[in-house]
Image (tube, rainbow, N blue to C red):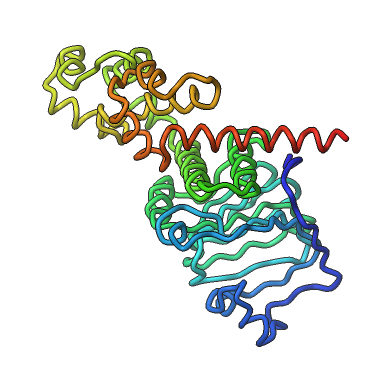
Length: 334
């Protein structure tokens, strides 16, 4: 894991205590003074620190973005206690065991266990009598509060997925994006964080919510759209196909999927277009037809609305990332 991610290893020769912070620490522009004042901690052990690049003011105000990322190898006596800390936190355990206290409950975090919390709420996490290796990912963005509120509808901040699962892959991809300078990095990173948060929502959703309560006709219609998204699928056509009133269909479809039928269809087409832009040399006009959008201007506008980039910009960025990963791989072989 993290083989191609640049980290700086930091070893705490002595325990780091919040009570020993100096005026110079509080005035360091790297840190949020208010956040430091609202934190108590004892840290022993070591950490692998990822050096975050500068984030544009636009990204801070409008996009999902990473504030910091570290993999802590906590000693047995380490803990962090905070409240009114302006950030959201995703933790993920690779080794050992930790304890999280959040919203009045205690949670044991073992290998493959993660947690997604709002740091404005009181929380405490600590190593549980042994070394604890855990990722600490601080995020922010205008919609994170809404995502977290939806996530907590399940009643617990904790999720579980094996360390070779999708969460780990998305996390590594996110860090790779931040390690490569390119013009649209903030947009790409925001999209990646969006994917991560959606993955956590689906990962923790009650199984019966998606499989039992969703009506069969909605599931059948989704499958039909996934297999025929290149065709002209109007709301009238889908309503006739499902044998129901189009307004009722639209309402029910959004109720169970979170999308209108048209938005879901557009997402299917744009996702396929992204694959073709990354994996083929087809011109954008040809790709537009391939995915069922026959007006290139409409295709470009829809694509930019979904990704923040034009199709050509997206392809260029994907190629830059691919070349960088290839070069990194060959460098490691020398």
